[in-house]
Length: 594
Ligand code: GTP
Ligand code: SPV
Ligand code: MN
Image (cartoon, rainbow, N blue to C red; front, side, top):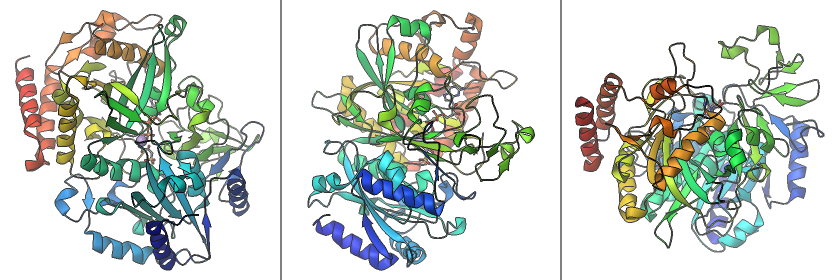
């Protein structure tokens, strides 16, 4: 398949370490993939779904102990501990190689070693990068084939270059006690053992495209971010691109594929999806920031996805999709999850493969759910009805606005604009959100998640903030404007006040208008807030007072917020840029003077 010496040398080492019975190169051909699907069905690793209703679709169940990313077992193994920073687990690289090689040694015995050459980004794009993952899991091969561009062409593009990322995945016994997801940024290397779930094993995704790539971006002067990318088309046919960073399971896929409310659709507004999770951004020849989506598919949250909440995501899953940990409807051999529709299936197996009793379903008790709360679909991006023409081009789209956001029941207003790039970096660095099921651990706890990158930044977060500030200096007046949104303010009963989903278009329109100097705003202690009349409420069952209540900046709530940010900032010590300290002091004074 290749004569690249650096590739062949590493593969030889891997073969010697893992001791597979056989070795198979993934060439990307449909013929080879079809053979692998058939084999996975034969062994029970995947279940073939109804070919009429869901052509080319499969269901996979992971072990119940292996259903989400494991942040406490994820390591950044930089040579110097300081370079991993206070927000990452660290281990000395030599020690970790030793430990993890001992876990993986010989575990491919009786198994096949699959070699997956893949490109993050359209093959040949100047912003794209190449990786090679070895794995003993067909599920990983088939998912990587949807999520990235795989096969012979990738190797042709790589040629003799040594600029590629090594990825070793070994399922081992899927033992949670020996599960490690390790990154060696200085060696362009990722090693993942004892898991077979999503973000832990599809090594192109969070491991490469965020943890390794964020480090590369720091060294090379570009950015790898946990951001969706969308194009907003106005009635004149002009398209403006925005990128948005929300923590896991906080609405990126939904916003990326949004369908505007009817009155806006009739006027000619439309959203185009470029990406739903990751953005790689470089400064272009004209000095603006250009973004590509390095992925080729969507690894989306299934529960809550339905024809009303996210029609385009649901459409994307209608063919050639792999479902993980959803329920199986035995009546017609299709899939189901909470929030798909109101008809609880009478005759279904839950995500663990046990008979599911709809009578026992209790919304308050997640153990009675048919689908796991972090169950997912892996769908080809080209299935998406609103996929952007720019998606496959690889030149990148110019970004007008960057949006931060998270789940904050009481604090952040529906939307505000930062006062400058520096102030925007401060807003991103202080971001917080209530935790979700996307990672193992407690759900609903407020945690600081700077730029939605807390679990994904491959180096010291103080250096990461400095890199953001540096990028702003390079971009100058061509820098995107920075905003913050919060779709998740709740009332006293805990209900979301803002309708969200398609109605978020009303907020996007204000954001884009602000970028073009077309919308007014009120300056507040935290930034620019829309005049209530500038958020269009046409056809919405919401009165002005309710809207005003979610645009409000509350002095008491924000005084507490400032104190929490001060605490959060202490972690970064000397590495916290002075600009951000000054930003915090200014905010403190502004709030005191409210
Ligand atoms: P990852 O793939 O984990 O990075 O998640 P994501 O950020 O892409 O989140 P996604 O769009 O899949 O949404 C996660 C959950 O948030 C789903 O249950 C959605 O129904 C819910 N959600 C998304 N958008 C909104 C919104 O505007 N309002 C409310 N209330 N819920 C939303
Ligand atoms: C996330 O948790 O942000 C995801 C899912 O997008 S995973 O690929 O598991 O990281
Ligand atoms: Mn994500």
